[in-house]
Image (cartoon, rainbow, N blue to C red; front, side, top):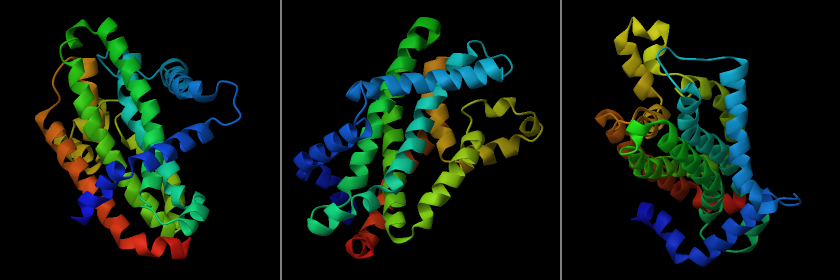
Length: 269
């Protein structure tokens, strides 16, 4: 029951969670001329930068992939949401130490509100990609809507992992540095820029594709969301099932880790 309670507190303390969310969102763009409009502009600019670097400057182009720019954009929302959520959530409890020491409240609301602020950009990016898919990929007009429930599962996956990372970093400060160090190689090991089937070193060993595919829990999430958007097909059953199971497992892991460290957080901070 403690696992369910961790997330039920989002509803029970929804007003406090809403206040934390609005505070974090305002703080993210404090002092800027556009203010909260950056929550819309930032994901657009980020997508344009990725496009320019990888599609124009480096001219990466997987074989037999028309509209590579859209292939890239379709893989970005899940990755960017994951990377930014982990980075921001990892320090969230530390940065709110004064509040946590002074007031007794469900402390998991702090990292979860951080994830919620990153969710704004995720929704914007996904909406842009869906709109582009409707224009440039006619065969995806029926399947593109499948990306929405799949994206919701990806949000659950990221939420659980972010909560676990935030909880561990409150006790072991090396965690945030480990996350920062891992994210760059993790990006290149996740098929955002390419399809696993197009990697020459893996094509000769099909079993390695399965190992690389499922050893990285982000790969099924990226590919399950991208399939209905870019290829106009339902996601592979293996990817969809893996994503659903990993989302539940991540939420359970986040709740478990948080419940184990909750009593020590205020002392350690």
